[in-house]
Amino acid sequence: MLPIIQAAGWPIWPLIIASIISLAIIGWHLWTFNLIAPEDLLSQVQQWVKQGAMTPEKVAQLEKHSYLGQIFAAGLRNTKSSREVMQEEIEETGRRIAHEIEQPRLKYGLSFLVSLNTLGTIASVSPLLGLFGTVIGMVEIFGALRPSGGSPAELAHGISVALYNTAMGLIVAIPSMIFYRYFRARAEALVLEMEQQAIKLVQIVHGERK
Image 1 (cartoon, one colour):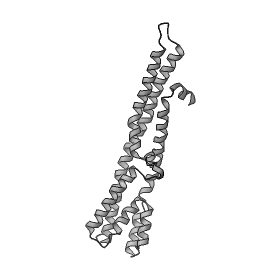
Image 2 (cartoon, helix red, strand yellow; image 1 turned 180 degrees about the vertical axis):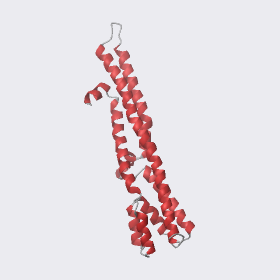
Image 3 (tube, helix red, strand yellow; image 1 turned 135 degrees about the vertical axis):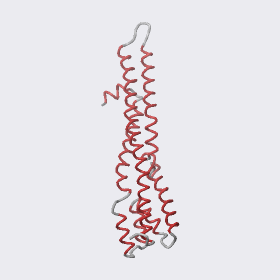
Image 4 (cartoon, one colour; image 1 turned 90 degrees about the horizontal axis):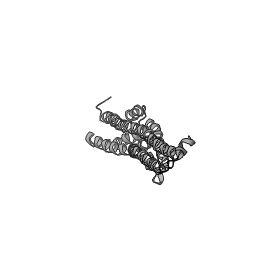
């Protein structure tokens, strides 16, 4: 790997940094998507509601449990209100969670390191960074051409810079774009699924579903 980096020259370093950030974002979201909506949470909350054991402490516990728990808690805090009010609270919480899934909150202003917007930016900018490296390589190639003849080593280095950076830009951009589209679609599907589960809970609270 080191010989390739040396052959590609200094323009490869922004692409290496972009690839590391991209891998970190992909890994983060692959891990956290499994924690967003636990499958058994709705049945557990149903039992609490049917048993009349839904206390403010359990609602607070739900809110800290997961994103799905936050949506349930938003509805359960308004059990004495009408069905419409509960659904409005659920939908508002769902919109907030959709934003947090795409841009999670991290300390010290590091949210951009796991943001889907950052992944989309990397997917868009990486080919341009590769093109920039290509231009640098072409400049070195033309700089090596002299009336007395060109240096084969300088020409080879310029060609390496041009080709390696072009390839690296595509290698970073293609997976980043694929995962960006995948995560965006999955986030929308998860938010919709969570809202549907919360509506089922509303119907149980109001006696419309057993």
